[in-house]
Image (cartoon, rainbow, N blue to C red; front, top):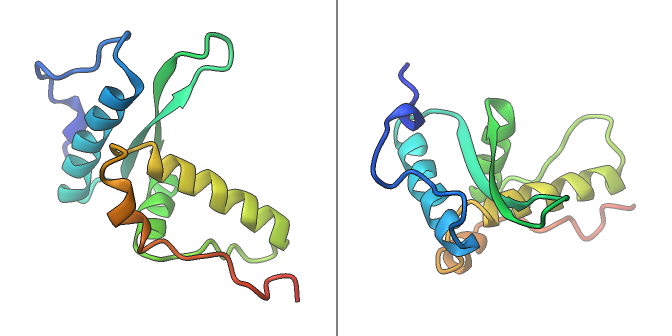
Length: 121
């Protein structure tokens, strides 16, 4: 399978782009990957040293977890305690949100599952 991200184009990210423009770029590439059934998810994060917006990637099963989250799945890893599951949910939700423009998030986030109310029981 060809990597849809390997295609060079004029819209390749520039180091000094704004966070929102990087999110738009990631979203375009994420849509290309989803259409090609290629398990890869790009998202914007802040560099811990410079506080600059940078692109990060999840691939394989890690990317599939983000995509499943967008389809309403809540992480249910066998043997994990609820605090750890909640933490993973927050990480996945953040990666999902930062992999698309803010304008896309409201409609997409409606499908994301909510943490179970009786999870501690």
